[in-house]
Length: 305
Image (cartoon, rainbow, N blue to C red; front, side, top):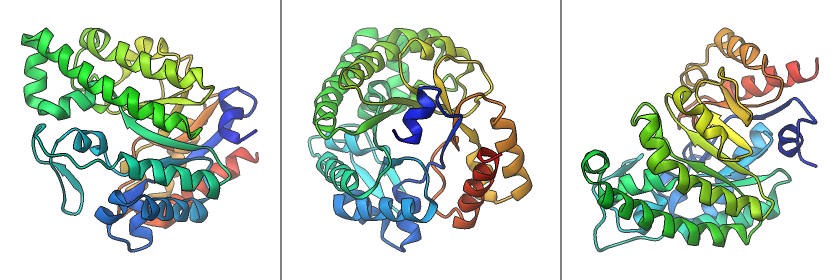
């Protein structure tokens, strides 16, 4: 059994995954990020390279936040980082097939669990109409909001079903559902059920379901715990949860490369009885590989104590 599964089952204390994704791994190889994000073979090559260098305990197929939004008609520009240029239009570029291709390749190439990142329907819905407009509708037009979320959910269910046929694990990222953006009541009213539906489908296939929410999550921890996910990736891992937590090292810390602070944050994180030690979000593209290797080394030393 792999280390991620053993920690989920509370049979081992620690697994490690600095959240190294397409942008950073492309940077390691001096590859063009936009090409990597648009080509499943190149994406798999970059992510495999990152895994070979760092030897972490899982691989996450994540190119950028806008894969599904672009497939549904939102214009996206890489310059070099991806930018959402506007709400849904009549033209779409479907990169979901490239994500699927990358996942298929990595399943054959690496001997750790492969996860694919998909967007939570709430966040995807916000991209479809524009975040500002979506948040206005959230308060003033419940029917419009619900319809947009249902459109996003229907797309994600179909996409998820294709991914689950590969036997890959799933991480659902829902950044706009953060308590830094909306209230716990709005989360419970609009974001909870769509997440629950996706997680149930993942668990029916006996695959691992992770949820990642950026920013402040403390007010919604009790609600997140009710989702039945296997892993909860959050910035602040100090609140008590029933769900296994993932995090502990801030992205700012890993980017700055302050060895003392990296070690302090890891030491503090390992107060947790069981943990997937990770960065709080995906590591910045130009993060020095020495900093990530340092995190792996320090974590390895602690796990061997």
